[in-house]
Length: 73
Image (tube, rainbow, N blue to C red; front, side):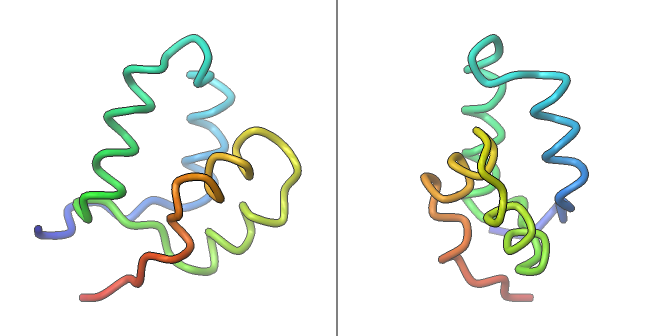
């Protein structure tokens, strides 16, 4: 799969704030599919920043295993 999107932490933070997962589960599911399918990636630095959090977004990042997926070009 070709990487089409590079997502920064600020995008994920705004996405969670404006489209909460409990209200938009289908949207988040599609977003997760892009990330886990390799079409979208989050740089390691952004993942580290997000994982330091204590909220729902940090839990989601840890649950999805995004931090274990290497970013290859």
